Image (cartoon, rainbow, N blue to C red; front, side, top):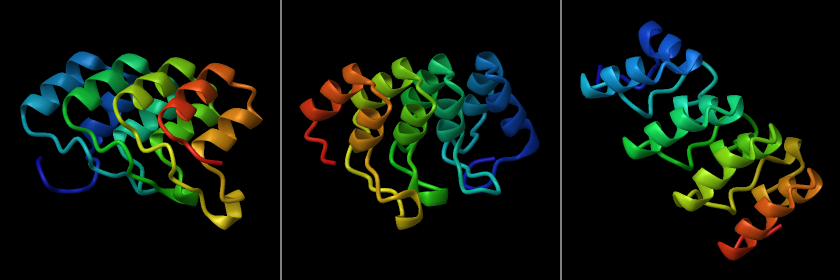
Length: 135
């Protein structure tokens, strides 16, 4: 399974369902933690967007790339913020996610900080500013 670069059915199902034991088993068998779906999103991005904090922690612990972007140049951190999953955003920030990724022009060239400010997520704004985030 390693190195294929695309999510296979088993990996997609396990990560979409948040099945930690199945994901752990697949990772131990060599699943590509950074495989992408047809939209260019990784399991980490999908887990962040869905607010699956335990799955996010597991994927990060297994070396998931924190700063992969897909449509509109949105990262897992940005997807967590947009979806208002504060604990996921905090885990990603504390794990070293790049706070200064900028979305595409069609998404108003926003950063994680500007998204957090717009969403009224004061705790996340503070964490991002501590990490040197820009607007």
